[in-house]
Structures are given as structure tokens and as C-alpha cells.
Image 1 (cartoon, rainbow over the protein chains, first blue to last red):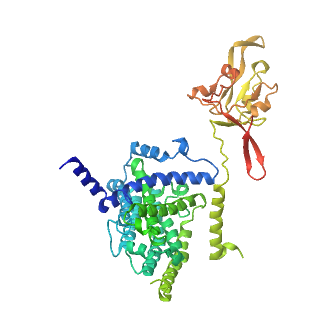
Image 2: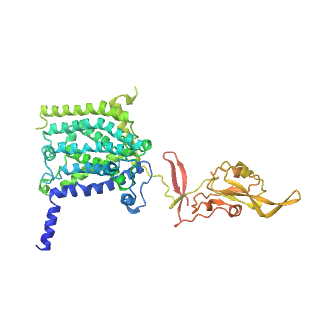
Image 3: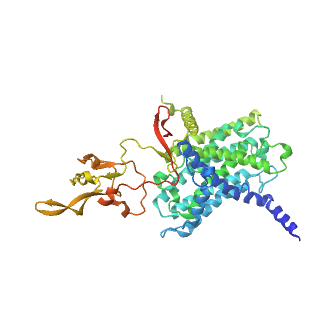
Length: 342
Length: 170
């Protein structure tokens, strides 16, 4: 076998969907770059709203754009301290599992109508189901840290899960009922011709968006990590790269939820001209841009909102969002009965 | 009825909050980028303190009034003062900038005006001991502030719409 054959084999392997999707887009490398970008952007936009500069002096020409690379290096070289009284195995493995379960659902995301790693009849249910592992691990971390702030933070995560998980599934399933499928590729195909989910069922879109903010502790639901109340919530005892993983995990989860949002409500990779749809590049870019817009809006809210109390968030979840999401199911059913959607 | 008491009213409140945030995105920043730009200090700014030995009458009032015990009298062996037939060393003030709170009481109480503020507030010391100014160092005045590149000077101005704005001083 010659060298060019070997190179071709490696390239074929790399660009095969079952390696490209988990590793490059929407998987690991994109996740990594996106975390570096979005945390920098979050600090930068919060600074702009507060009339200051934010990170600036690391690569000044681009407004401190590689600040997060410097932070990452710092995390990598800082000593990850494991306190004496902790449950050591759970303490060390917790952040790794948390990051993993936040990242794994991204492999169920299709990049285009013919480019995907996993295609299943219940693709939506799989990705949402995988996302629900996170809170359990946060609870384990909170317990294993042997710290009162960690325990309170973990319990807050448990409480919040009660508030967001049920309406999140209901509003997602209302879209499944509307399109008549839970296959993510078919969902996007059903939205061709600008009949996007957000136009058909805005109620489900709003509830899904709010609940994805709530489940990834974006403002105003930054209750789990509430820095001014309980230091860093469940992640108080962490340092070094273990802390970096816990911080990145919520952004990864947010990224996956934004991808799901753009697939369910913003038409996924639509509108791609049909003569370009054979290649996954343009659909992938469109999908990424749509979810990036949602992410940017999500991190922008940090500069607008204060933090809800835990009881206010729970009340909002049960009194407002749950009825709204049930309403969105009826809206979907109404649209089907009226024959608006096939 | 308050607007926040109905769901629609609350929705409007949320939208207004987001609108305010977006509006602030387009207002110019008000940061003074310190090492590159410096703000001109106003008249009567309470910076570090300068000591004029020739005016000092060794009355110790500054050390007595100092609320943070930063000002302290030291005995100066080089100057002797006749006091009841025998020569005693004169007392001179020294200041400890780790304690000083820049309240300016010592400057106010000095009967001869031997102490005064100078517009220096941004000195970095490389050791704890360097911040202790004995009478001899105190007399020489605060250290000079040096910048890597000459900074741009800005003057603060009140603007009726935007609050404090900065305009070039030159």
C-alpha cells in the first residue's frame, strides 16, 4: 500500500460520519472551540452592557479573544486538589462524567439530511434522555465534596430539575406530535419551505428556550452556582482542570440544547439550495450559526437579569411553564386537526 | 393595578429588561484605560503626603489626630533641643503607608502647614518595609510615578445625558 493510499484511507475514515460527528462537528473539537469562544463572548458582552472593556490584554488586537486559551492553560497547570474528607472516587470522576454526559448527546445531532452518526426513530428522545443524566451527577458531586455549599448547590440542582425537566420533555414532544416523528432528520425535512417550528408553535419554542436556560444555569436561573450566595455551588471544592470541566459542562449542555432548538424550531439546515445539499459543509455551517445565535442571546441575558430565588424559579416552572407547555401540545394538536400541517 | 401582577405585564417587563440591555450595548464605554490614559486629578485631591521640615514645629498633633495610627513621631538624634537645661532630641513625624487611609486629618490639623497632599496616588512598592517613611524619607516626598510610555491625559466632565465623560486634557 502506498503512502497516498494510506492518506486517503485516513481521510476517508476521518470524514466518515461516525467519526466526524463525534470528533469534529458537532462533536468534540467544535464543542471545545465553542466553549473558548462563548465564555470570552459572555464576559465581553456583559462588560459592554456595563460600559467597560472586559478581557482585553491577551491579544489586544482582537479584544482579548484568546483570553480563554490563557485561562485553559492556567487550569491545566494548576494543581487539582482533592480534599481529605471527600469521597475521592466520586469527587474525581464526577466532573469527567458530567462533561461526558453533557457532550455525548451531541452525537445524535444530524449535520445534514444524509450525514449523521446515529439516525433513530426516537432520536429526539435519545438526545433529551441522555441530557437528563447531568443533574444526577451534579447531586453526586455535591454529596461527595463534603462541603455545605456543595451540598446546598447539589440540592438546588435537584429542585430545579423538578421544575424544568417535565415541561422540557412536554414541549419537545409537542413538536414531535406536530411533525409526526421523533427522527431529527425527518423533523428538519418537515420544516422545508420556511414553515419553521417557531412560526407553527411559538409557545413550545418559548418554553423550550426558557427551560434550556434553566437547565444549564444561565441567567436568570443561575441558582445552582449562585456565586454570591453559595460560592460556586456543587463545584466549590474543585480546582485545576477538574473545575474547568465542571464549568465547561454547562456550556456544552447549553450548546446541545441550542442545536436541538435550531433543529426543532429554526428549520435545522434549511434553507439549503438543493444543488448544495449533497455536501454536509453548508448545512453544518447553517446549523452552527443558528445555534450560535441562540447561545449568544443566552449569554447576553447575564448582563440583563439578576438571579431568581429557588422558590421563584420553581413557581415559574410549575405555575407558568408547565401550563404553557401543555398548551403547546394542544396548539400542536389543533394545528393537526385544522390541517395546517400534513 | 401593578403591571407585574399579570402574566402579560410580566412578559412586557421581561421584554423591557432585554431592550434596556440591548440599548446599553450601543452606549460608548466609560473606562479609563489606566496605564495608557490617566485621569487629571481635581483640586484638593487627597493623595500621598509631602512633609516640609523647615515649617514643622514638632507639636505631634498629626500623630495624635491620625485615626489609623499611620503617623508616628520619631526622635531625631541629629537635632538637639534645649528643654529645661538638658538637650533632648527633636521629634519629627514619619508615616506608614500600609496604615494610612488618606483621610487628610493630619494635613488639616497641622498649625503651620508643614504637611500637604500631592497628586500622587499610584505608587507600587516592592516590599512592606518600603512603605514605612521615616522622617528622612518623608521629607524627600513620595516617589515619582514612571510610565512605560507617556500616558494620555483625560479630564472628567459632567454630561447631563451620560453622567461622567472624559475629554482629552491637552
